[in-house]
Amino acid sequence: MITLIFGEASSGKSRYAESRLSEANGSPKIYMAVSEVYDEEMRERVKIHQAMRKDKGFITIEQPRDLGAAKIPAGSSVMIESLTAWAANEMFTAEGVKDSGHVVKKILADLSVIAEGVYNVLIVVDNLFCDGEEYDSLTENYVKTLADLVRKIAADSDEVIEIVSGLPIIWKR
Image (tube, rainbow, N blue to C red; front, side, top):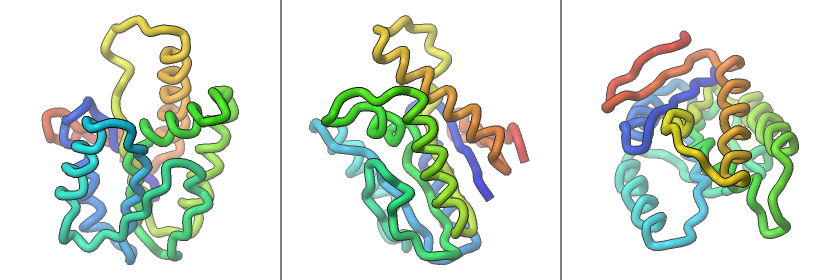
């Protein structure tokens, strides 16, 4: 089962996803942390998320890209935090900026590998599509790539849930 959980920044989507992971069938419960820490602000966000999941019995796998290569025990429940960061990590690399089509194919292939052997997957993603901002072409390409991923994953998901002010709105079940 795949569940896509999206919402604005600080909407409560991670807290909601973690509660779902805590209650999920499947063991062990895997928290895939994909963010790369580049500055103090990000370091603080990581600390907040680590404190949120402390003592919940999650096994954390820190893997910013190539998630399909992660060693995940069969029958696990997996939370990916987050598709937003994962897409950025796959697109913007030390070798340069990867093509949007390559990034979408890579992530969908990795997700397929993850989902094949586990009980369920919870995917957290930021809703970056409603701000009305105009971005430079590189950022615009990233946002469009993420939107393409969200549409494709939502279509294949068993559940799609939006978090608004900490409250879940079920769009698909």
